[in-house]
Length: 165
Image (cartoon, rainbow, N blue to C red; front, side, top):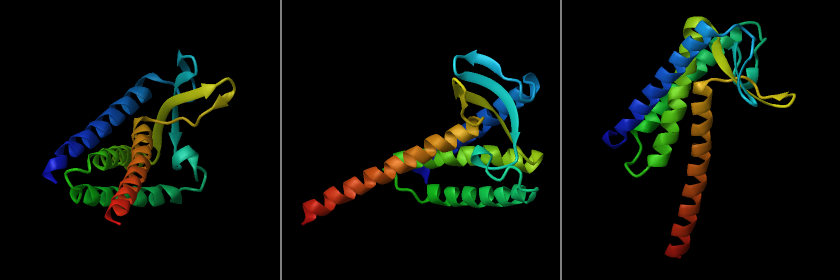
């Protein structure tokens, strides 16, 4: 556990950046009014009562408690997983720390507000990606790293098995 102490700092930094940027978005942006930053990149304040891509957004309110419970369970699972990692599992530790920070960032919103604050909007011509936030970005990058780590460890196990034969 001590070898991955930096993970707790990284998760905390993600939570801090996520909450500060959400506070700034609420302070300076008008709901559903895009502010052009760069071509194909706007800032636009929205609230999401659902999950990723507004899944179950209009489910009637029960989804708040479902996603809150799920976020707590996932966060506890990630914490336990992080504490059990071996020192050499750095990429996996990074992935878990990113997902944990993002999960806690969105958990804070759901707990206090009943919705998640989103404000980053990417688009191409008339095609718009669902609006997201820093926590969502950390979760996405962490998930990609988890997949890469899984693929890498499968490759390493295949090589080890073939050398032992």
